[in-house]
Length: 184
Image 1 (cartoon, rainbow, N blue to C red):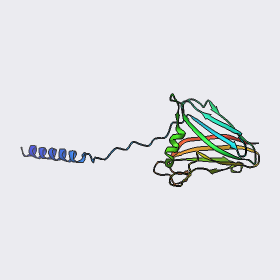
Image 2 (cartoon, rainbow, N blue to C red):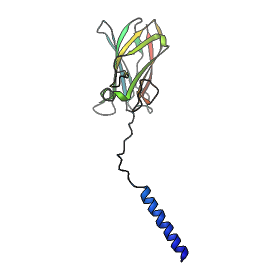
Image 3 (cartoon, rainbow, N blue to C red):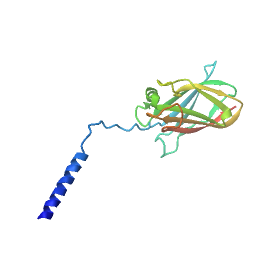
């Protein structure tokens, strides 16, 4: 009988501890800030002093993974020229397509475009826009080409909620593309 009483008290104590440990703190649940689905990236280069606009696109209807891209243009620019650069992002998996460029602009304090030429001597990129914290965004900018040559232009959109510090390091990639670059 004594054993049953001890066992009953132990079970009661365990149940009490379980209920007090599971008490709701009343905090709102935060939904994770997920990466964007981007199926289309278009870079528009406008040669300074002209109205000549060249557009170069990447299209992958099902996003990252799955089927291969249906379009992946080579960026062809003239040597020793300055270009104004603008980027457009779409999610064409929906009808009508979502303009992700607008979303990136609205959430500019969470996004950073990184433009990395390889070799680095082919082109230099300067940011043309900043977020509310004075960090670069990269929706617009200037590209200056140097001598003729072939290489790559890596275009990354870094998703950096609560970690953006003006460098590419924190966060994850919404876009990570290696365009072929031809300066001739």
